[in-house]
Amino acid sequence: METQSWKSRITVNPKQCGGRPCIRGMRIRVTDILDLLASGLSQEQIIDELPDLEKEDIEAALKYASYKFDHPVLAA
Image 1 (cartoon, rainbow, N blue to C red):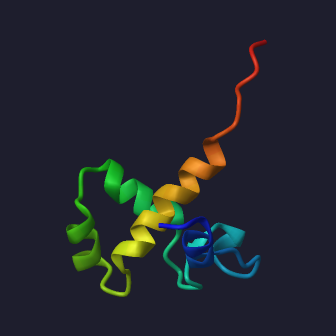
Image 2 (cartoon, one colour):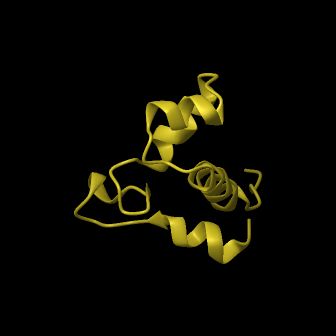
């Protein structure tokens, strides 16, 4: 998935979900998807649970998380 493609799927609206990153303006937060993946659900199971999602939305959530955490950690 190209950078622009996944970035266009992540939206941030201060008036929605407390300004947390969501998928395509819906009230499905990136953290919701990450939590479901972390609990062991497959992408297919997540889409079954949240049928408004597309596979590319789940990939965008993962890319977003990777992008946000890809920075050096400075030693104290």
